[in-house]
Amino acid sequence: MVLEKFIVTQMKVTKICCIGAGYVGGPTMAVIAKKNPNITVTVVDVNQDRIDAWNNADVNNLPIYEPGLAQIVKETRGKNLFFSTEIDKTIDESEMIFISVNTPTKTYGKGKGMAADLKYVELCARNIAKVATTNKIVVEKSTLPVRTAQAIKSILDNTGSDVKFSILSNPEFLAEGTAIQDLINPDRVLIGGEFEDAIEVLANIYASWVPQDKILRTNVWSSELSKLTANAFLAQRISSINAISELCEKTEANVNEVAKAIGMDSRIGPKFLKASVGFGGSCFQKDILNLVYIARSYNLHEVADYWEQVTLFNDHQKRRFADHIVNTLYNTVSGKKIGFLGWAFKKDTNDTRESAAIYVADYLLNEQASISVYDPKVPAKKMQSDLNYLNTRSVSENEQQVTVFSNPYEALKDTHAVAILTEWDEFKSYDWNKIYVNMKKPAFIFDGRNLLDKTEMIKIGFEYSSIGQ
Ligand SMILES: NC(=O)c1ccc[n+]([C@@H]2O[C@H](COP(=O)([O-])OP(=O)(O)OC[C@H]3O[C@@H](n4cnc5c(N)ncnc54)[C@H](O)[C@@H]3O)[C@@H](O)[C@H]2O)c1
Ligand SMILES: O=c1ccn([C@@H]2O[C@H](COP(=O)(O)OP(=O)(O)O[C@H]3O[C@H](CO)[C@@H](O)[C@H](O)[C@H]3O)[C@@H](O)[C@H]2O)c(=O)[nH]1
Image (cartoon, rainbow, N blue to C red; front, side):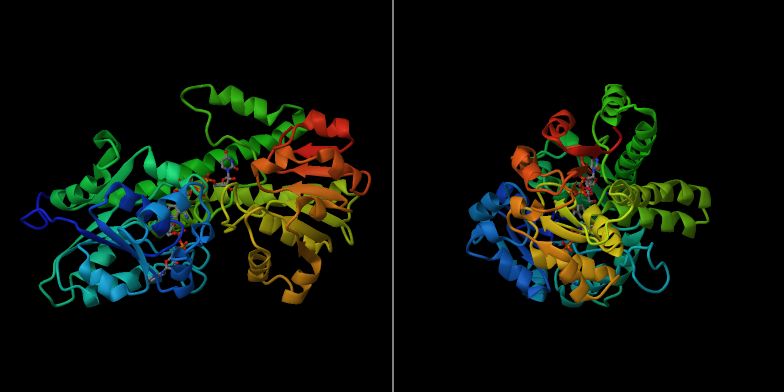
């Protein structure tokens, strides 16, 4: 049930604080600031380096890469958009506080490997409770398990002061690589809350650019659960088409043709049916595991098993791709050089979290391959730290076995095979004749994104294989 009033007079928002200057906090607040020039938006973070990078005079060197972001930051930063580490002061000065901190999968204790780790969110709630001297609307922007608002409310309602808090759930649906486009033209904005007036305060901020019929108001729990459910459905489509891709490879059906044929059914739709080496990114796996954990905690084991299969199949798809490389290269890649095109989890982002490339590389390194990598946006340091994080081998072994290049032609020179792990557009326009000439023969391409033209590659002389065709 949504109640009518949180604070008797409608609160006017002149200052917004967003805790967490990450992939969501940064772009979301930049767009809110651009569309609401009368509101001062300050994004705060404990990470001084990240804040310094957001304040970098050169907007082309912001901590995250998103098409269109640099331009908006250029227009708004220093006017009504600020990045700061002064967390307490900013919280107290603001009427509305977004919590946009990371909620990774727990790596310890109860729920390890499944549940969302809510310690950063709880720290934010405690911080707000400690420093707030005036009434606040607190907005959950992070993706949270259903009923988290209850815990936040309990912390905020037990400060012993007269300060009142209203908690809203406003999950973010942007996808990386298209964040600005998604924020400017969202399919919907979802606001869950207990009090109608607080919901409307936030709805008014979005109404500066989002049509009213796209602003959905729900209760808090529906809003929290909708976010996990949306990601579960999207990821499920990818695992479903990937499962069909394996069947295609056995039957000479072509997964691109199957995807097109089923996608033209308006009940199915064409999006998220692209077969691939497996989905990556910071959200899908984490959010599904969280959903599975929640279902199990209510003893809903069939529900949990159903959704868990989506991530289990994704693990299978990544392993299957790596296995296929080894099998095709005459059952051994030991001492062979494999060229990787792409390390990011998808194109147009520098984010590598849960990228399929990391797991395929790890598998091939276990088989004693050496890997040379090129990605247009991911720095070498990040690739090495992604591998080191897995703890499979020593730092020096990773450094020895993986070489990172800033030129794709150099990366692919003298390789036995090319593996395409990210669908960067530029890979399509490379001089593949030149790449072929400089590779060992037979020259293999393993296209994990079905990016290249199969007929053309075969014509050049490559042994070409892709997903599901
Ligand atoms: N990345 C996406 O595309 C995406 C999209 C939708 C939703 N989400 C959700 O949004 C949330 C944030 O994701 P992200 O990708 O922006 O994470 P991120 O790791 O890029 O950024 C989180 C930031 O929060 C900061 N932080 C953590 N605890 C803090 C504290 N107590 N005080 C101040 N700062 C603190 C960290 O230093 C970090 O810079 C997650 O719950 C995620 O699931 C992410
Ligand atoms: O048909 C497809 C579509 C995507 N992918 C892969 O799936 C992963 C995720 O892609 P995408 O969903 O586009 O990017 P994310 O930034 O992870 O965005 C997802 O996760 C966000 C965080 O919760 C949500 O806000 C978004 O709505 C949701 O799309 C990537 O590895 C893609 O390459 C495929 O393999 N095939």
